[in-house]
Length: 284
Image 1: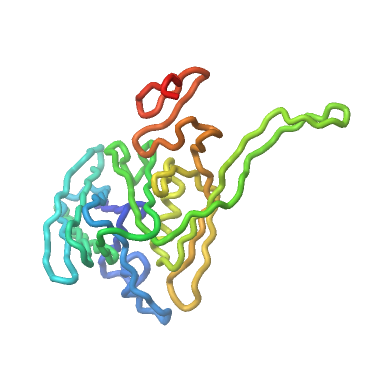
Image 2 (image 1 turned 60 degrees about the horizontal axis):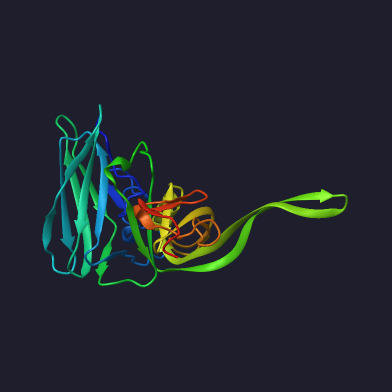
């Protein structure tokens, strides 16, 4: 069937190199050749962290390489078939870069009786650290184009800031002959994530990611309620604002706060379980 798809929720964004007319799907951001001004942008990776790319395909073989733009060095990457279904498989390519610099990733695949495909990543820059925020996102269940049963979690580093926005929630009131009584109340801690001057493809990626089951910013899990995009005149960059509700607020709906990517907090009237460890209150 000639299936080869790299979902745009992946940590690193790719374009497909083909002979079609130039468009957003097969042209790198810094190579767009329309009258709009272009500012080079490098997706940000921290030295030593592992970024995993997942591919849905029925192709026979896959080859991936890491290209160091600064030195010209080419390094082979390891491709592993992680899960197999009737008509296709999911392959994963873990990428760990231990040398600071600027990079691209190239992926090619061949299919017996079909045409080869070629993909090229957007520009990547590796540094010892980045200011801003780390965004991780993933689903509990598989989607058509990403197999989350492999344990894959997507990761993006961007210049951005999280700020307090508001307290939300709802109240239910009972009017007892002119005297109102609050009979039920819910609270939400609402914060905003502001990211300025990013390319359209990265805003697209983050918005897709914000609609998955888990969206984590600097190790705090949020539910994203809405987003706003402000386009920059004369180029392909945008400002992105996400309005987010903090999922676990210590002292409001959780005793131990957010538990990170490794587990969730559950509670009854006497026992609280966090990351498979039972706490009965005797530690207090």
